[in-house]
Image 1 (tube, rainbow, N blue to C red):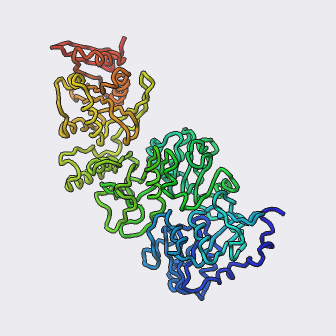
Image 2 (cartoon, helix red, strand yellow):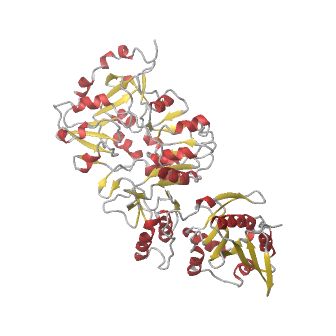
Image 3 (spheres, helix red, strand yellow):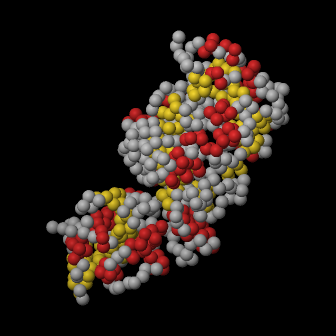
Length: 624
C-alpha cells in the first residue's frame, strides 16, 4: 500500500468532517490557528460557522487565508490575539476588536510550552501520514510545532496537497485527536517582479554579500529583489525563518549550495515558506531543505553559529539616532516584531556577520521621508539604537554600529532622499546632533556618481576599493591625515600642518561631484572595517575649464600604483563632465607624483619656479 494511502482506515476513529471537528471548541477556550500558507482553511471556515461559541480567543502569527473570526459581525463569538499582524486582521486590531501581542518570534513557543498561554485547541494543517504514521507540518513548522505539542486537543486538516517537508517538522497521527481530510490547494503568495526602486536597494545590499555567506531573507519585495543580484556569488548558504520562489534559481545554478555553512552544512534551514506551487513542489520530500521550529531557527545563539551570517529585514522608518520602527505607522499597529531582532542580534554575533535593515527613502509617492528626525508619536522601536548596524536605502548604505550620534545622523541623512536632506540637517543642527557648521551635499537626486565605484588591483595583487568621497568620510579622512609622515604632509600642503581639525576637514568634504570632485581609495568596500588610504581631488576653474588637482597617499601604501589608478579614475570623471584638462603644482623633489602625472596618457606642459613645477595637462593632447 502506498505511503499516503490507507491512513483513513488505520485512524478511522479520528477521521471526521470539519463541522464535527469544529464543534469540539467550547466557549471561553483559546484556539491556535496554523500559520502562513499552512492555515487550515476548511477548519477556519467551520469554526467561524459555530453559532454556539462565545468569548473564544483565536491566536496565531501571520496567516494568508480567511479570517472571518475577525469580522465585526463575530465580535461576541471571537476575540483575536495577533502575535504578528497580517492584512486580514489589521483593521480589527486597530479598531480595538482584536489584540496585538508584541513579542520576539523566537520566544512565542515558550509561551505555549510553559503554560503561560494555554492552548486549548490547536487547528493545524499537515500532510497525509506516511507509512509510519508521521505527518509533516509542510509549509509551516514555525510556532505550529510548539502549539501542536502543547495543546490540550489537536485538530489537523490532513491535506493531500501539502508537501512532505523534511527536518524537525513531524507529528505522529496518534498525537492528533481529530483528522479532517482535505484536498484544497495550498495557499499561495506569489511574488511579482521587483520594481526599479527595490532593485536599487537590492544592488546596495548585494555589495555587502561575500562568497560563502549564509543568508536570512525577511518578507517583502526588497529581500526577494536581492536574490536577483546574487548570481555571480559562490557557495552561499541559507538559514532563514522563511524563503520564497526567488531562491530556487540560485539553487539550480549552484550559487546556493550551503557547502561553506558552519551549521547544518549542505542544508537550507527554514521554519516556513510562502510562495507558489512551484516552491511547494520544490520542498516536497527534498533533503536539501530542513524545516525546524522557530525556537531553534530564530534563536540568536543558533543563528550566530553561522559564520558570515547576513540578515536582511525591512523597516517603516528610522530616526537619526538609529532607532528602527518596523511594526507600526505611528500609533497604528501594522505588522509585528517577528524575527527581525532575533536575526539582527544573531548576525551581529556571527563571525563576519552583517545585520541589514532596508527600506525605501520615501513613502506616499515621495511625499514623506522614512528617514526622520524623530519617530512618529506612538511608533514602536523594534530594533534599538544599540542593535542597529547597516541601514540601506536606494541612495546607499549607512553603517551605524559603534558610531556616535553625530556620525549616525550624518550617515543617515546621506542616504535619505535628497529633497529631504536640508530639512533633516536643519533638524539635526537644531538638536545639536551635528556640528553647527556641518556641510551638506546638494539636494539633487543623481548627484552621487555610483558609476565611479570599483575594485582596483594594485601592483602587488592587493584589491582595494575606489569610490567618490562621501559626506560620512570625515572620520576616515581624519585618520588618514594623522597617519601621514611629515614629508607626505609637506608634499601635499606645501607646509607642515600639525593638525587637521573639523573646520579644515569640512573643506575637503565640500564636493558637488561635477566642478568639484574627490575620489578615495579604501582598504574595504564596507565602512565597518574600511581604512582610507588615498584621496585625489580636482576643482574646476570656470574661466579656463581646467581643474586643479591634488593627490594624497598614505605612506605605507605608496609605491603600489595607487596614484596611477586614482589618476586614471579622476581623468575619467573629469572627461565625463566635459573638463578640458588638469593643472597641478608639484614640489620638484616629489618624484613619485611627477611620475604619475607624466604617465597619465596626455602631454604634460611644465614650468619650474622656486622648486615647484606648475603642470598643465590638456586632454586634447595625447602623449606622443
